[in-house]
Length: 132
Image (cartoon, rainbow, N blue to C red; front, top):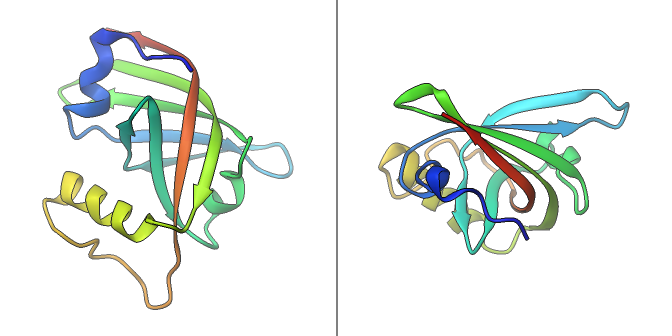
């Protein structure tokens, strides 16, 4: 497992930075979406709902790239490339609530739809580099 450079760890743990996640569609075309994320034990975690494009492209083994831009300096960013390590419904509701706390300051994800099934996705970095 690759550890991102220390000089950019604040983008993973200390700031309310968004990530743009790039995945590959079934037809080979790229797809990019802004996402909330967290970073724990060397793994980037994102959350999505079943039925969304991200849920169809973020499958175990899938290659992904993330660009995390410093909210205080848009010329500073961290790029992570990796593979989806694990996708689960277990704990996904608690995960989206934790992300809502980080990004919105609320205890519960306010945009949940009736019948929505959440997925928590773990991404293992295979390379990481930054630009200041």
